[in-house]
Image (cartoon, rainbow, N blue to C red; front, side):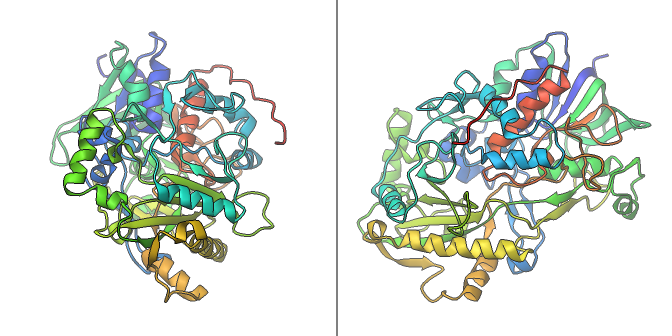
Amino acid sequence: MANEFDFIIIGSGTAGSLLAKRLSQDPANSVALIEAGPADRNPFIHIPAGFMKTMTNPAINWLYETQGSHGTANRSIKQPRGKTLGGSSSINGHIYNRGQRTDYDVWAQMGNRGWDYASVLPYFKRGEKRIGAADSRFRGSDGEFAVTDLHWDHPLCEAFIDGAVAMGIPRNPDYNGAKQDGVGYFQRSIHKRRRMSSARAFLHPSMNRRNLRVYTNTHVLKINLDGKRATSITCTRGGPHSSESFTISARREIILSAGTFNSPQLLQLSGIGPASLLDELGIDVAHDLAGVGENLRDHYGVRFVARVLDGVETINELSRGLKLGKEILSYFTGGKSILNLQPTLVHVFWKSRPSLEQSDLQMTFTPASYQEGVQSALDEFPGATVAVWQQRPVSSGYVRAVSRDPYAKPLIQPNYLAESSDQQVLLDGMKLARQLMSTESLGRYVKHEELPGPQVQSDDDLLEFARHNGTTTFHPVGTCQMGPSTNAKAVVDDQLRVHGLSNLRVVDASVMPTMVSANTNAATLMIADKAADMILTRTPLPAVELTDE
């Protein structure tokens, strides 16, 4: 049958593109990859600085928004998600960041066998093509996903790093190696002046395989069950006004890789989720599973902006007029250019309190500033930004379908800063960010603090600023969390199989049971690579032996 395959993958994002390559490597396996958006031909996807355009483009972006809450002063927060081949890896900020060892050891301690750091490290390494200095115990060089260093300098970056070192934060040449803590330049998913999306790394080199079929502009309406067995999907092309739908059947498995927002929504639309919600929406309950859509977690960041002295050229100035023309020319002739940059350049991983053994804060620095904190428009004055967020937030929310309409956007409620512990860690982080902005080495370039401004000093005022001005750092996870069946909110087991159903797995950032201390792209790649071996019933890569460095 033309519309029958061994495997169906729903979503061609970070996880789906990798899975498509791994599952189709054996010509005996037929694979269908379903993507709601178009092919990744938009040129702004591939130019690194093009993220400023893709962040707001409805043709390749779902353009979701959250519900307001007390933690955001009842503001709705924009939540861009990729809607094209490569998914969010085609519109993200290019940062490659794995997190800390303990992130994954905690997953294992929660009952998820084989997800400790020693067991997942081989999968981080397998898919990685590290270009630059690296410790081979921790880094891979033979994979498909290129990870490179930043070859662009600016005096403000060096001044910021010098100031952090003077405060006792050590330089760390590889935060993805033995230890994350420290300060230095970010590693990036940019190679040869182009974005290294999951589609570029894994999918496009596999597109000519006869056993792989990629459906673009194809919206999945429902996953169909025969009893408790997933058998097929119902799809449509042509948008919400299309009256024609068709079915694609799976002989072996359906793998849901639609992301932290779309994966739980599609499960709910398919009658898989909390019975009370499905009843409320008028959806027949095919499988009552309370955790679907719960446990949403995200990093909530606050940005401090400094107005830099006149005469110090920041990215703000380089992005306008004749100077921008020179930068464009330099980019297309192979020279150094702001078009080859990610949105943030320097990292700090550090502790909110000296007594902690490892960092609980992530901070970033860039010699640029954005209008009202939105990364799609730069300020008119010379500026620099320090952003800060808590690495492992405890506050959690949910994602819910709002109707039976498969084209309706889901309700997204992260409940930012709901927990007092999250408020305290962020508050400590804001104070540290302000210290980093006012070090002696950076201070000689700074005219004054633009945001939040010197009038904001007390703890209450700082938290109010966070509520009114904070925003997502685009790292939602957890809505189909992995865990044993004894966990009432678990959606998948440690093989990523949906509890109580057969032939259905979820493989994307939604399965993370807790937040990683990192941007989420690298961890999602690892999850997909590990899942590929599970799906193909291969022996897992052997765990590594680690010392306590």
